[in-house]
Amino acid sequence: MEFSERLEALSAKVRNQASAIGTEEATKNAFVMPFIATILGYDVFDPLEVVPEFTADVGIKKGEKVDYAIVRDGEVQILIECKASLGALKVENASQLFRYFGTTNARLAVLTNGVVWQFYTDLDAPNKMDSKPFLVLDLLDIDEMLLPEIQKLSKESFDLDSIINAAEELKYVGALRREIATQFREPSDEWIRFFTTRVYEGMFTAKVREQFTGLVRKASKQFLTEQVNDRLKTALGAGVIAPPETDSTDEVSSQKVAAEDLDRDTEIETTLEELEAYQIVKAIACSEVKPQRIVHRDQKSYFAILLDDNNRKPVARLHFNTKQKYLGLLDEAKTEFRHAIESLDEIYQHSEAIRDAVRRYA
Image (cartoon, rainbow, N blue to C red; front, top):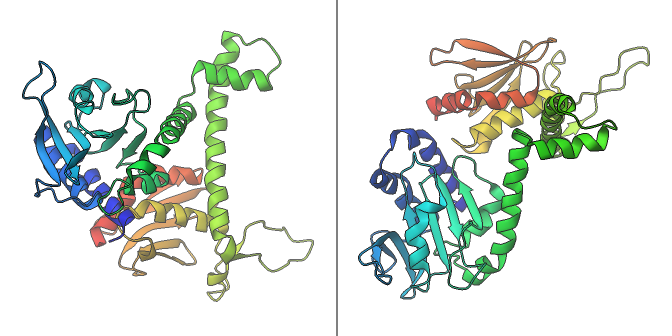
């Protein structure tokens, strides 16, 4: 399996099991050891590569242990401290990592609950672990831009110099992206004031702030939706052609038809909006199966999304031929339940049901 496929497989396991694992030991066995073995490629049963319960006495602190130490060429390179998967990670959880970091040759430290992986180094002061991670990997929401950096930590591609050189930029760019994402979800007063004063000429009063709080949140959501749609349009652009020209007296549609659907029933028109929705469903389903297994068939009454191009494996149905759009999801008995949607991004609200459908057939 490719690196990204192994990571997706572990992500699916975490998604399915995280809520059932409440102890630190269970977290190690279910998530941490598989990450070290399948993602980083180290042999967890070889003490020359992975040392569990690693001890390095620090001053008056004797016998304290770090959960794992990864060794290369006889030197400790990475220290890993684990917490239970249901617990939130806090910098206070990393006290042993802070103490051990300066007593070994390790330049990298990891704090994890098996779901979220925080990677630290010593950017602020030599041989002293930073208080903030330079890279954060969330297995429930994998940022594909981080995959090349994660891969540099693997046994096969280990490149310490490259990791350290990129760490400062990763640290601040990652922190900025997370802060921007937070502001888009729940804009702060400063964020609201920042945008309001650029479009509103009056005084920024409490009443104005209250009014623009909803407006800023709505504008942010619309902007993100447009960005997603633009990316989908770009991805689909090579396979999309304009419909035949119509008489000037007819209403002109701005929607387009996929070239691959032109040989189907002439009464069936596949719209760009249906294809965009299909790409969203496909992206959600990719956490469970390879993308190429998710296909679509447009029919007169609905747009079907199937696993393995098999009518007996329906993932979802799109009912977009009326003013009110519906996302159709089927239960184990193949009974369809329709969910009204106003915009395509609302499909993401049904992600787990889509994944459940794929898992039933996969």
